Length: 122
Image (cartoon, rainbow, N blue to C red):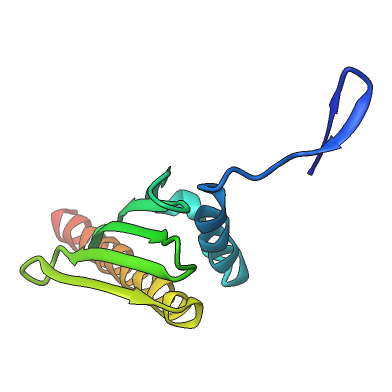
């Protein structure tokens, strides 16, 4: 990204903690996953990442100094089953896709339940 400072064009430097966050955003964008549909925020642990909350998953994912992602998440609807592991970018991509599938399934189930309940009340 180029920014203008007092008439001088210069390239914006990435902070060390932006790399992990941007890598995760790239995966989300690649699969048309709307980042705004997750409750997530950028974290600055090691080389950066996200803290996330979806109906099924909560935790954090960040890029370590060894250029490998660390995933520390709990599956809320599965007795808080935990997953803590270092993963490569392809494995991270698979995990993110699965988290989004779980979120979409939950939203669909809640939508169907609400439709059914409101029909019964009519």
